[in-house]
Amino acid sequence: MSYTLVFTDQYNRRARHFLQRHPQLKPQYLKTLQLLEANPHHPSLRLHGLSGRSQGLYSVSINLSNRITFEMVIADREIIPVHVGSHDSVY
Image (cartoon, rainbow, N blue to C red; front, side, top):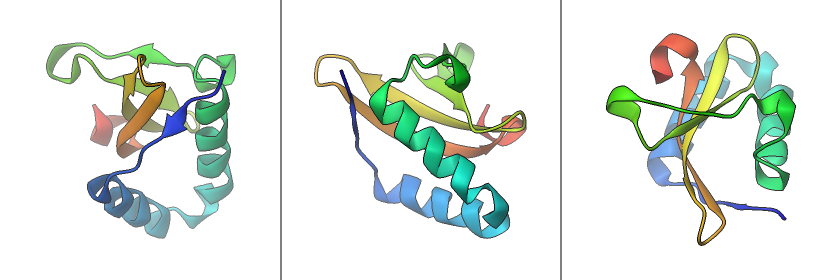
């Protein structure tokens, strides 16, 4: 069963800025979003819940260095991306 990605204006600005700095990652970024929408539990995404000040958010990997954090609303089958960037910038 698939989920629906719900993009906020704030996330879209962050994603645009991220892709301007890393245009070579656009194919991997788009593939990650497609997998996330189709099956957030796909093993290649390395989905995991966050703790501490980011408790309640989840993270998936674009590659070894970059992540997308998001809120997952199970009841409505929605995924709301929050941040995209390097491991250090999103955590």
